[in-house]
Structure formats: structure tokens, C-alpha cells
Amino acid sequence: MSDKEMAPQEPHRRPWAVRRARRDGLVVGALLTVTAAGLVVIWPTSSSGGHDHGESKVPVSWARPVVSDTGLAARSGVRITHVATTGGGGLVDLRYEVVDPDAAAALHGASTPPAIVDEESGLIVQDLLMGHSHSGSFKAGVSYYYVFIDPVNWVHRGDKVTVLLGDAQVEHVVVK
Figure: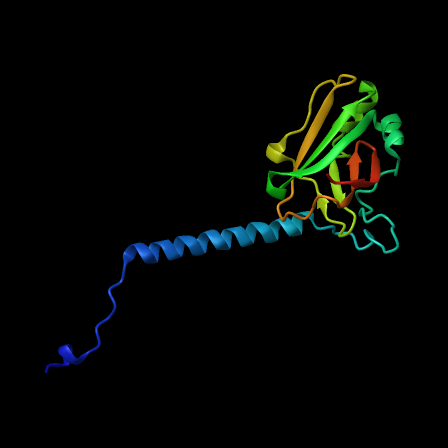
């Protein structure tokens, strides 16, 4: 027998399997990178952001005057109608009704972007789906909404969140 005949046979390589493994590896790597980047972007950066014993976990840089539901209507001209998770948990839907269109104009302020803060972790959910934001005049009695991206599915039904709208924040809103 010759040396070639005695050498073990190499398994037949399937080019499609190699390409598929590389593609799958790239997809998994990209998903992990996006998830890690999302955590870095939305995780509170202020060390004074959260405390125990029921105090607000809203970072100082985001904090606004705390008001009740009725106080929000007086201060920002809107009333929260519901906060719910949607999209398989990857989105948070915030709905509000305008009670005073003039006061609600403050919701357009660049220095007071809308956000939702998970009260347990202090995580800030602030990125709007497709950059959606209302522009133009508000109308009394009309409901409007913000849909936030929750890339790590952090906010769940039954959680308590702080809602930041205009120059005010409402604490302990239960997610539906």
C-alpha cells in the first residue's frame, strides 16, 4: 500500500455549511453588540440616580418636579391614560390625553424629552420607535402616544415606572 492509501481520508467539506456558520456567527455577534450598546446608552450614568427605601431612581440629570396625575394635567396639560408593553415586550406604549393644549406645548421642549424610568432598576427607556414624536399643535380631548424601544425587554407588565413628560414626572405608574 502506498502512503496515500494509508493516510486517513479528510472529511468532505461542505462550502455551504462553512458560509452558514460564518453568517450565523456574525448575526449572533451583531445582536450581542447591539444589546450591549443599548444597555450602555440607556443605563443611568448618574451615581446619585437611585436610592433604597422608595426614593426616586431618576438620575439627577433627568429629574423633573414630581407631580400627581392631576398635577401633571395642571403643569404639562396632559393626563396619562396608560403605559403598556407591546411588541412582544420590546416596546413600551405611553398614551396620554391633552386637557390643556397651551400647556401641552411644553412636551415639544428639546430640554425635556419624554422618557420612562423603571423604578426597580433606574433604567431609562427614552428612544422612540422610528423617531416618532408629535409635532404641531395639540388639541384638547385628543389622545396621543409615544412608543419607546425597550431593547432588552426590561419593562414588564405590573412593573412600576416613572413617566417623564414635559417639565414634570409622575411616579409609581403601573405598566399594563
